[in-house]
Image 1 (cartoon, protein in one colour):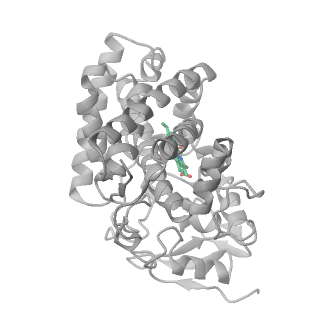
Image 2 (cartoon, protein in one colour; image 1 turned 90 degrees about the vertical axis):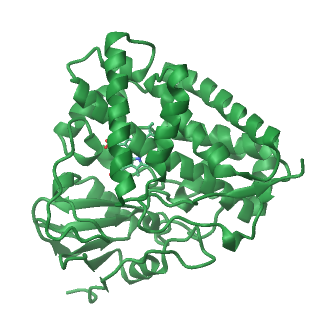
Image 3 (cartoon, rainbow, N blue to C red; image 1 turned 45 degrees about the vertical axis):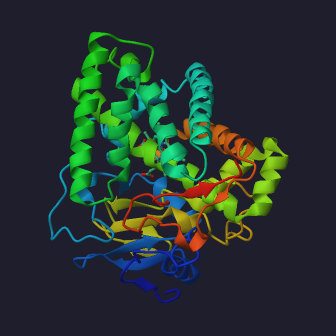
Length: 401
Ligand code: HEM
């Protein structure tokens, strides 16, 4: 028998004051004890907390660990023994193969080089339009609502082919979907309303296809309900993540002036800056899996039915994988973060997300050379750890007009 097993009984709801970018201390402490800890879920189920980089990758490559929603427990909320229903057709993020790949495969074929090129041009235009509007209204501004949230929402409208006239209302719908904190009533209402709007869009594309991902998919054996679910996955996975990378990433840049100066001096550094911000911030912080059978993992036996919390943010700060893991360094040599996951569910939209950030950060810092926080850093209101995605609630910024 190896070292005694470290046990974690509650996850924190907030990060350490003054350390908005670092994972909660309890998770870092768990990683110091080893890559695998025992975790007691609300309601008493004894499962696992995986904090090590290598171990998380091995879970993500192993089909004995399931992503299906009906097996899941929430890490911090007790459902009182209730089992969640399976996800509706098309919502493949929370499915296993072969069902999962039935939806993922046709979508992969739609993220072509041609489409990425067209989207890059549109991302540049959309970014410039939002920076123009922000500049025109003058300082101060909330960078989250002026830039970080609307840009990814507009990009998803492009991807799905939302007609120009409907974009403002779709965008408002998408933003309410993003703003709803996990588990509250607003989240359920926003989910249903968004799903309904996507259903209308699918029907419109079926009737009159245009040049977009959704229209192309109508030319397949997928039903309208399945397409609606797939569109919803693109939104759920692609909006809040990118919006928070842009807002939290700007906050991180402003708190690391030497890195910001390096990016300003050399826009060619943007690709590496984006990868490092992805690693350092890990906005998609934890994901769940369930063991379908008994599995030996990290020297322990994970029993069938056990729930595992995979802490992508501590994996990306694992000292056995990254040198000086808590330092933000755009010139670091050790790449290979898991901010986009790994294995069969690895982020499908990662190239698009990269484009949005590679265009967004340099354009922002170029447009506003004197950009700075409009309030002391300690007053920036962060999302709680109960949110699925880490980030800021708003980011008040100012500049010399
Ligand atoms: C899956 C992160 C942007 C579409 C994932 C996963 C992560 C992730 C960690 C894997 C979840 C798991 O292991 O269960 C991110 C981050 C983003 C981003 C950090 C922004 C910086 C996007 C964008 C899109 C997108 C822009 C598309 C428009 C997807 C889809 C999946 C996914 C469809 C599900 C893949 C599957 O289940 O096979 N993303 N994502 N993501 N992402 Fe992203």
